[in-house]
Image (tube, rainbow, N blue to C red; front, side, top):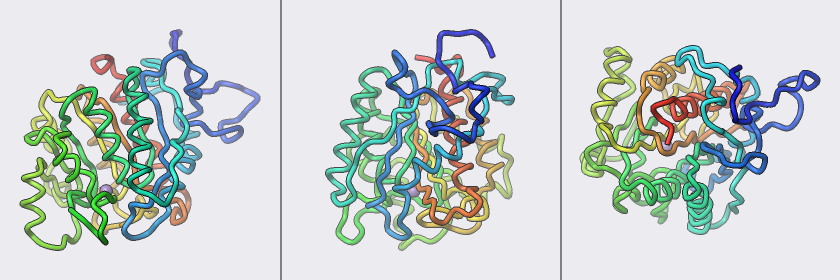
Length: 318
Ligand SMILES: [Mn+2]
C-alpha cells in the first residue's frame, strides 16, 4: 500500500475481515474522516416496489458482502481507497409508509453531502431512490447524462395511482429537467413492457437502448464505445439496478427478468468506462431474503467497488 493522507480499510491483524462491524469494505465511518470525497450511503427504502418487496434490507446485506473487497484493483492498477477519501456515511433514516416524505428526506440528506463536495455511491433500496439522488446531483452539476443498467426502462408513468415508484424515476427526472436528453443510455434492457408506445416515450425522455441480447452479438468493447459516444463529456450519473444481471447471477431482486447479463459482462462493461466524469451513482434493488449463497449481495458490493474505483481514478478527481 502506498503511503498517503487518506484513511483506508480497517487493517487490524487481530480482527479477521469477517469479524467486527461491517462498514462498506471495512472503510472508516464518515464521522471518522475530515472530509469524504466519496460517501457510500445506504437507503433502506422499498415502499416503491411493485412486485417482490425486501430491498429495504439491501444496504446492510451489501455491506456484509463487501468485507472481501480488497485494496488493489488489478485492471485499473490503482488502490481505489488510497486515491481519494472514501467513507461509509451510514443509512438515511426513512420510514416505510410515505413515499413522498421518504423521497424528500433522501434528497435533503443527499444535498447536504453533495454541497460539501462529496460524491455519493448509494446502496438501495428500490429504484425510487434514484429520483432524489438525481435531484441532488443535478442541483450541483446541472443536467446529467444518466447511464442506467437495468432489465427495465424505468420510464413508466403511474402505477396503482403512484407517480413516484420504482418504475418511474427516470420519467420524473426527465420531466424535471435533471437529464441531458441527448446523452442518456440504458444497458441490459429486456423483458416485457405494457405497450410498444413505451419505447417511443422512453426515447423522447432521453434514452438510447442497448439490449441484453446485444451482448450475444456485439463485443463489450463495441458496447462501451457506444456508451462513451452517447455520454459525451457530460457529468454522468450511473445507476445500477442489480436486475440487469440474469437471475442466475442475481436472484435476489424485486422484479427478476430472464436472459440478462452475466456478472462478467456487467463488470467488463464497467471496467471499460475509465475516464467518465461520474458525479454520483447507485446500486439498487437487492432484496436479501431471496439471496441464497449471497450471490446478489456479492455482485452488488463489487459493482459499488467498481464505481468507486472509476470515480477515484486520477482523471476523475475534482
Ligand atoms: Mn430499475
